Amino acid sequence: MTRVHASLRQRHRGYSLIELLIALAIALFLIAGVLIVDQTMHRTYSDQNALAQIEDTERFTMTVLGEVTRGAGYYPDPAQTSLVAALPQETTTAPNSAGDSLTFASGQTIDGVSHSAVVNGATVSSDSIAVRYMTANNDGISMCDGQSNTTGGNAVWVNYLYTQDTGGMHYLYCLVQNETANEWSAPIQLAANVQNMQIWYGLNTTGSGTSIDTYVPAADMTATDWALITSVKILVTFTNPLHSVYKEQGQKQVLLFTKVIDVMSRTGS
Image 1 (cartoon, rainbow, N blue to C red):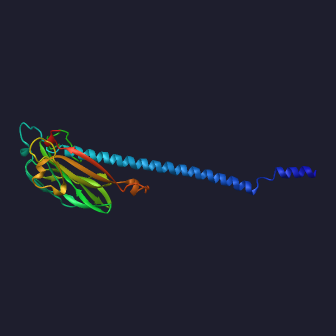
Image 2: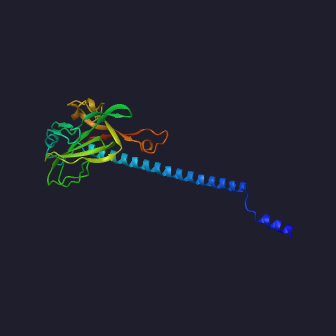
Image 3: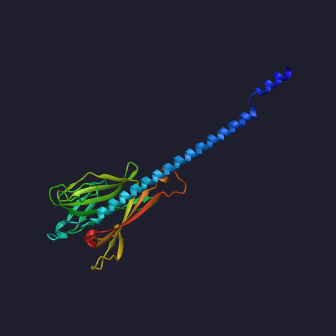
């Protein structure tokens, strides 16, 4: 009987403390592995989402800048009028926070203002660009705010694109003026995380053909240079969310994108 009771006690004694600790350690190890995998997947998703957002913002920004700038100097019925007649002399003040003054000579299609901005501790130019063209009623040609001419007749438009800080955020803004009616639209935020623009103008100073013989930064443009613009080179600086938001090691603070745009009135594109 004693042997039987001893055998039963051995079979019902359960796990030892060492066995429980080993099992607990294995469980904790497995849980830690699951948490690491989950965090890695979450970080990967966040990084991919941030990259997709900045790519969408870059693509949209460059598309708008390209389409608006390329249309500089467009006007309907070239057989009936001329560039000088279609785009008369104008001086206007943009209703942005800086109150930028824009001056167009007769036939001038592009103007701009150069300010200064601090990016990554360095002082750089922060340039704007104003583009003029004439559109016909319901011709479908869009301005930078996505609207088109529904005035009932031909109208001259100024598209003004600039960067501005609002509430600690960097934005690319669009302002549209119906020059014919002397009316400005309200400013529209086109894209976020756009720290600034730097613009160089490709000039044809020879007076023949459309080849570019020099690029001039916006701050150095003279009154006579604006009529010589054949192309526009725009460098846009975006905040990198992988650095500013997700604190990824080794990421740059900003991302730079460049686009060279032919001007329709000079190249015929």
